[in-house]
Length: 375
Image (cartoon, rainbow, N blue to C red; front, side):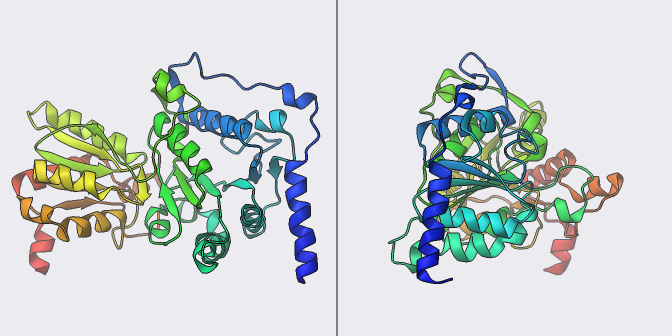
């Protein structure tokens, strides 16, 4: 495409997304969360999107079924009626195509939110995400900003098999130029998504399909339109002094359940919600390990080259290593493509029993037989 026609295309795309005529659809109002205290994650995400669309006219949403269908998981419910088709853009089933449009819009001053029906489908657009969005700011010497959000469900849901169940936290977490966050509860969903939209860098927001329908109590502070969670800062969900558990997304809830169980036995676990995969809050993890002297990491992804491996390296490469009283343990998904059969699928995903067993091994200072044999 010549420079002349490229300029015409960019100008036309920008005008299309920004210059929507104001009509009666602008008077549609979403259900306010201002009086709510118990909020589902999908509603927390929806409110964050609504507030940021209202705050900044450069913000727009693009993806499959985000508009008239109200979103595959109803996260964009009501936004099409309120903001219209020029800011809530339905697309054909072409991840590479609409992701490229969104990245180009970000190059030209808009702040697009690109939704994937699942991050497994984002594999079709991996060149746009990595080579275009993540690298352009660096390659142009900072002359072009890429304020774009890639969001959608990540990881395993239920009975959707190998091509719809993969966790991409380690994939995107390995890429310079990207920021990667993974919300657990409704507070995370609101604060992290709003921060991602306002960030001038490409941010990958890894949500979880199972968590969309889970409700959490929210404080007035979290319900404020000005509430933000800094990207790169973990949250201590529960304090303890016998063991540190580090996780993200849905499995934070599993860790909290295990901590409650062990507390009944007099064992106090500290549970850290990473929130941000890249940048990672190594400082919070290191300080906790120095206090508890034991570490278990928990994730849905594959065991090789995972988030837990990076956390382990952070401990081994710091003075926190000298504080360990037992070898750390990683709880991960099985090293196989996700099975479809329900009974085998359950074996491939981390369970509360798996986490409890790992914690007991660390507390007892035991080394798994297979690891000892390999050594």
